[in-house]
Image (cartoon, rainbow, N blue to C red; front, side, top):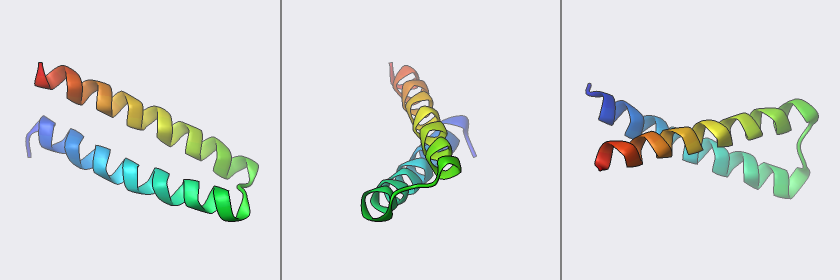
Length: 57
């Protein structure tokens, strides 16, 4: 599996997980640990998107 494919797959998984966590946050709220985990996933998602955009140039 090429590095680009790994980044695309990681981006897809992070988007799905972040979406699920945001839905949970909107419905029930998040505990402190879950909130921290969500922020970390969003940072990873942004980093992955940045790497993908750099690869496409």
